[in-house]
Image 1 (cartoon, helix red, strand yellow):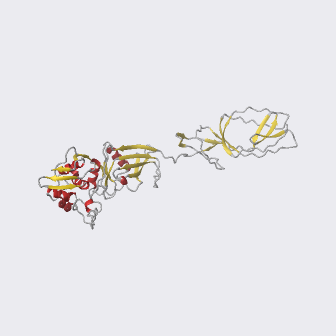
Image 2 (tube, helix red, strand yellow; image 1 turned 90 degrees about the horizontal axis):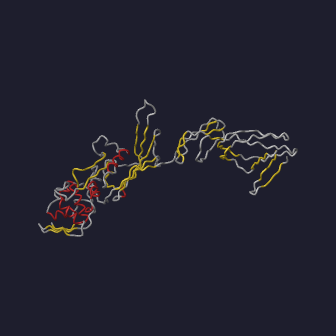
Image 3 (cartoon, one colour; image 1 turned 135 degrees about the vertical axis):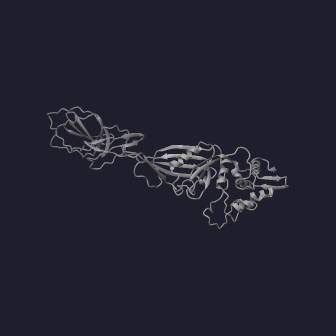
Length: 450
């Protein structure tokens, strides 16, 4: 039969060859690419003895076929015969047939020679776990590996917020401050203790300087951090900051002194130990400047230990204290919010264990009173499970990725009712008088009579 050429509406050119009503259409504009083609069972063609063309039967199963579409050459037509047409054969040796159900489209990069290679998928793709998926290429096995290995999954494992607010108190260093001493040293002239002495006729300022004083040129190891940060932290967790100045009149000696809110804060630091319950106290961890066996291990507490400690503290509705320095210095601050997440990845550069299973803990421990001291910490936990009956039990190793981490956590509980007795820090001061001054500061009245 004769051969003809027609042009479609889309502008593509189709070559049509008629051979006993068997029509072959070849699209000359197709590019070399891979397509998913369902292969259906084809009917067996019949041979027509009146022409020289031979049709070959290629019976296949109904299945999904990954077929590379190869740009075809313009067919060569033998003009010497009306019944014979020669077309350059199309190479279909790259047909890939998959007997697995494929629900996710993924880019597959192939190399020229993939014979004898193996591709196996054991990963999670779009939430579906694919295991040992085999793809065949002309009876050769290809294996695909970890398509989504870089995906990070996040799990919230601890979230807590205190039900009561916290407040900012000063830590009052022991080291003498040449300037603004009244705002830094409890023994300063015209400070809270100095005014208290004038009001009550005692020598509390002298006692304080004799027992809690460090000169400006002190070479002691704790000279730059020794102070009353623990007392300030207790007050921050338990007591609202003083609101108003208070004028105190002592009728017994006709003295009258006005205490500023800063003076009242200083006196509260002195009376702090008298403001808490003596029979309730939580302390978790170990000070690195103690004589404990772990004092030189700056990794303590490890991430899993810190997580356990924080879980204990979340049973309470009030804020807690934490020493944020893992070295010999002690810097306590109050915290009122905890959030811990478990990750499968960490973007901070670190040396990851080469074997076993590794997860990451991200700690976000925050303080509304001291936001500049918020803690953003990363640690890892690696576990190695036994591979046979004779192996040792599961081995766990862990450590910190961030440079610094807390040393210990603790908390106190407020005493119900008035503070009483001589102050533990300074026995020259009566805790009950400090309590009365503080209570008056929280009201609209500015005068207290003793």
